[in-house]
Image 1: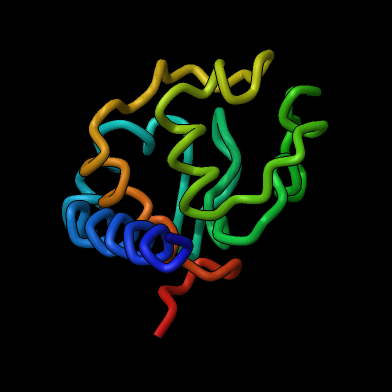
Image 2: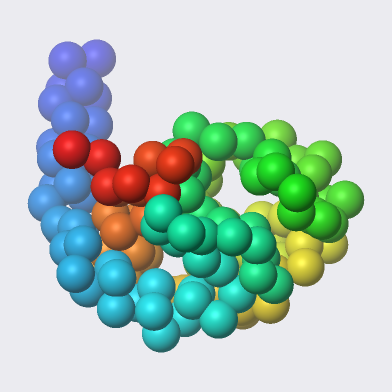
Length: 130
């Protein structure tokens, strides 16, 4: 039975990965429509209402330089990766009560996947990873 459980888990992971294939261009559109008002990304990104999102993958929440984060974000144990991003962006106030994040959340799993594909491609210096 343990072998069967491993196979079921592997199939679940494989299905999840293919069910939400990531589209960087759609992610850029989502970013421009929903995130750009508050966040910058890219070589010349700086603070806006929210911090720049360069180098987000692997960065501790509340750690971007020279940004005035909420205590909730600074004190969170979040390290950004696809899982934590997915949980947060679906419902920021539930994931981090007290956050200053204004968006109520993105509910589409596909849109979140596309958005993550777009955001994770930027290094800390704002260049696209090669």
